Image (cartoon, rainbow, N blue to C red):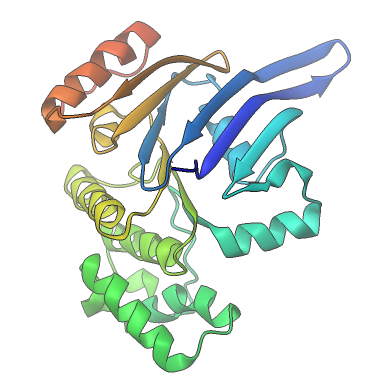
Length: 255
C-alpha cells in the first residue's frame, strides 16, 4: 500500500542570525490511507508547527512533504493554494463558519467552487449531514445552532469534497464534554465508513483515544509512538496517559 503522506527529514526554523529557534528537528514518518493519526506533545513541542507545515499553511525550512504522490514542498504559492483547495480538508477549533450563509450553504460552498452541479451537491450534502446527524439544521444559520453542531458542520465542510487528507487542530477545544464525545464519535465513524485519512493535533488524552495511532512530539522530534491495535479505547487511553505523563503533558481522567 502506498503511503498517503510521507514526511522526510523536515526541519523548521524561526528567527534569524543570533536568535534562531528550531521548532521541528529532522522529523520523518509516514501515514497510510485510512489512518486516524493523533499528534500530541506539551506546549511548545512543535506539534502545531508540524501541522501547519504538513497542511501547506506554512513551509518547512528543509526536507520534503509528499501528499498523495505530490511533493508539496516544491510547489509555488499558487500551486499550494490549488493543492490545498483540491486535496485537503481542515477542521479548526474556532469553526470559521460564514454567519451570512446557512448551514447548507456553508457545507456546499466548496463543491460550488469546484463546479459540481446543484442536484449532485444536494445529494452529497444530505449524505454527509445525515452521517453527522446535523441534517435537521441545514436551513439554519451558524448563530442559531449549538457549538457542538457548529463543529460538526465544520467537519462536514472539511470532508464534503472527499479530500485526500483532513487536518484537525484541537477540534474539541471549544466544546463541552458531551459535544466533544459526539464530534469524536462522528470523526471515528467517517474515518471507518469513508476511509478518510485524518491527522489530528490534540493535547487531550481522551480525544486522542479515538485515533488508531499517536505520534508524541517533544522538542520538535518524535519522542514516542503508540498504536491502538486490538486494545479497547480505555486500554489505549491508559497507554496515552502513561506517555503523556512522561512528556509532562496535561493529566486527563475522563473515563
